[in-house]
Image (cartoon, rainbow, N blue to C red):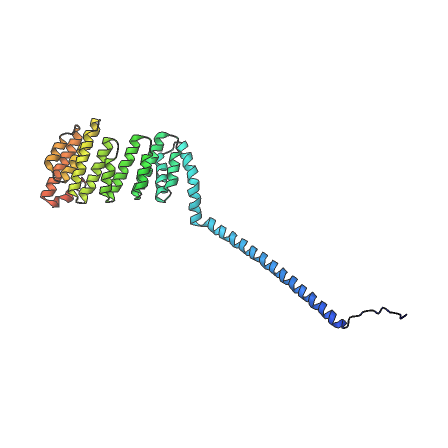
Length: 287
């Protein structure tokens, strides 16, 4: 029987095996180093971002835009307190107008609707409607005016909108809007304003139609004082169109001596200016 011996198995090249281990160790070390550098770089980036954000926040807090933003948001609470304390309502109205002009009409309307006092709430809404009309946002103005519960305030808001349209040269649109106003007194006022704008635009025919509408509405006014005031406005408009007979006859319908005198004065003034245009400068303070 042959004897078998177990021989120790040594690496054929011990030096080669050591070099392989060294390379693996170096590779592992390099990988670890790269991971460490990546971690450090990432943390450094986060730190830089945080620092820049902090610097940016400081700069933003010190900027004009930041100050205005804070004032804007805090003003709503201050306005509520001012209403509760029943301080000068002119301050509330000025604030609401500012909101509308800045493009925050939605916020202005929302703030106005939160006013508990019905009279002050209606006044605020009228103020907003007028601001919207002056800003050329007539559709929004009419929509807001219709939402005013108080009839008188709603009509007043509509008159303000019509006047703004007329002054902007949108006389046809103003005329149609004036016809829809409830309340004869307010409708007459609006029509007289439209006629005034048409006269300035040398739209005599349209102005005469507007004055006819204004006179019909004036005669439907129940209060004598209001009717007299509206008829005087019509008479003055007719005088500017050089319809002196119609102007005098309308003036004679005025029950108030003051209204009638104002109409007579306008008739005389317009006649003199027509005869001598150079006299217009002498009447500038009266017109």
